[in-house]
Image (cartoon, rainbow over all chains, first blue to last red; front, side, top):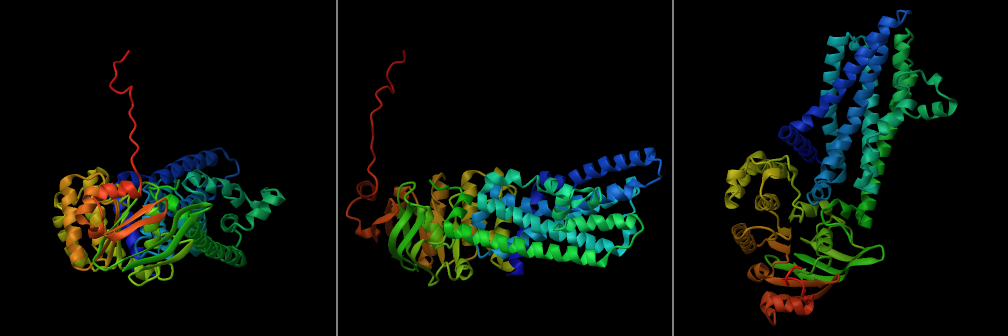
Length: 267
Length: 247
């Protein structure tokens, strides 16, 4: 694996962003809309709740973390789709670029784009709605790390899925975060879920993050075991996703499936 | 420089390429001819390591594309049929990106980029987005990307299609010039007149199998006639209703 070739892919993303404002806008437009929408919902809930419970960190904090995860995942998938849409995926591999460098480039591009989204959300939620995000303390580091790793894993898995079944299944990729969110317990404790859903939640690293977030807000200590468990799961997911992508790529080259990513399709 | 023996590629029951055996010497310009669907692009994909053969062996620059893909790809340049450009990257950005992928230092990349843009009459469009370029400019950009890393072998998939005569002449002269310096050129084309001018070797393909392989000087008749005889004879039908008075 050569760092200069990974850097070249990031350079490609930079050129694409520089050349097209339409690509820059989605980096922060959707997260802004989410922050504003949920910011006002939490304000309203604060005004009508008799208990004096502060919904801002509970709901807005959760939305911010969940949006960060979505940005990470979509950072990977969107960079891959750029190559599918422009029919360039196959052409990349006529150069010395290898598959691990390609995936590395997608991940690095995702770090940059998701960091922009996170920064915008922090500024908006903090200045407009008074979310003291950094008051959560150092525990934010493992929270963000787990969500980042899981976002990368899911993004790589999603690209492997498209690589295996063809560009037509792209529409199945976009709703993945929405499908996962009920199990991740973004807005409610896992205890609310039926037992079978809880079983699914326990293999999803974000569920530990959101349970820990609620524990902090309820004045309880965060379980280090829980954090380690979620980090372990997220790392395992990343390794599994990398293995899956490499396996599917090799299969596509061997069977000729990869030819569907060039202009001349097979008859 | 290029050799393949009994090269076969199957997609399920369909054999896109079957038992292909030929070799191309260093510095040759080999035209790989055949009708649409004959297996030309599939062969190019196997020679460039993009597709694994079902059976048979391939060697390019003394390397097996399946066993040493990265080593091979540092020594070849490829002009894909679909050009491989991004609409939102400029002509110059495409070349700078190519330099970065092949680990050329910035000074070399910039120097070669300037020279290629000049040689291909692309200087005026260096800051034009590929999406806004004419087809000829797009083709020249992709051609420049293939040349930039100074390859030992050039694979060009239909380089002369849909371009004007001037662009065509510029590309032809450049190819003849690099071939004189020992670079091997392997190209596919449907433009037989151009092939006749530039090629030193001809390989003709019909339904995935080689039907002719010789130096161009050994052709027994004009290329077009030979192609029609061996590969595909045109069936011209009279459509009597064309040109008849409308009722």
